[in-house]
Length: 216
Image: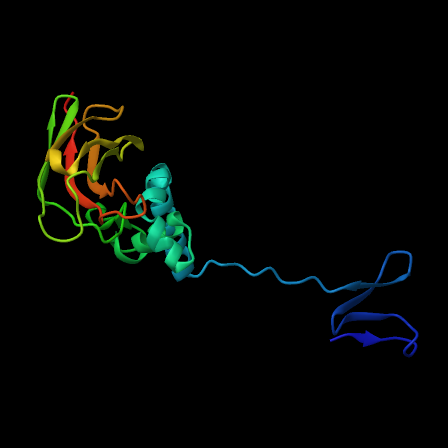
């Protein structure tokens, strides 16, 4: 509480409302605005959320150009960017573990989301420097043999990426993709989805085909 001297026209010491009064070494009365307290965001919940967000953004940033293909339609409907839509899904569904040791469950991350039919019995096998994809066409739902296959191999150890878009089609039932740069023992994540040949906004929801460890 402030203390007033010599009536209302005199100086004062302490704080009154939003101002602080004091006297300097020369005896002059000084009045200054009270400084605002800095609010910190260091509650446990906020720290945990920032940790989760950092995990997701680090993982997804190298995939952003593919997210613009895979989430364009659903993100537009939600009034969001494809990257933000994918990040929201990953934060909600793909974070596992307890603080502070959060991790991403890569099987629950989506690279695309849409109404085009997925394929059945999709597999991926590492052979030397290549990943061989195979699948069986789902003959039900919205689909065409000419749908473009989007093949993705992601080195999560160094965030290097290999991909192909339309080099093979749904009707080809297989495809091969060279692995990204890395070291022996790196973990590779493998995803697959399809994009309509006639409507680029129409895609299938991505399928996670597992992970492999490099040996060469």
